Length: 126
Image (cartoon, rainbow, N blue to C red):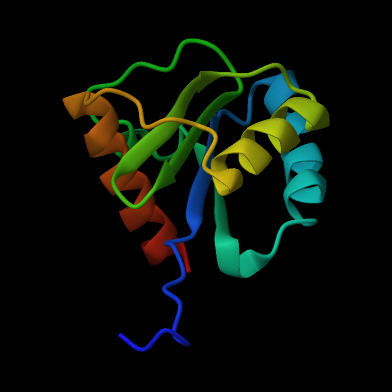
């Protein structure tokens, strides 16, 4: 590859796993949209998964606390867990992931399946 060509890393997948019946989730949805809007869309793919309407995305995983956030680059899981519903927390996590400061999480078959399912869900949702 010529030195002038740079390979762009795969965009981050940032997925919020929530439920419409959850008041915290309903409040978090617009906050997430506003917070992630400051990032270049070429570097970030965000999606919202209502786990009640699309429970097939979870596979064998149980989400017990909201909001739950998944951040991955390709098949590499960088973060999966419950987050406080604050813009600053989301922004710091995404900035860290974009900067390469979030280490890859140890392999977990259920979480890997979740990444694949969310990517497929996002592709099907347009």
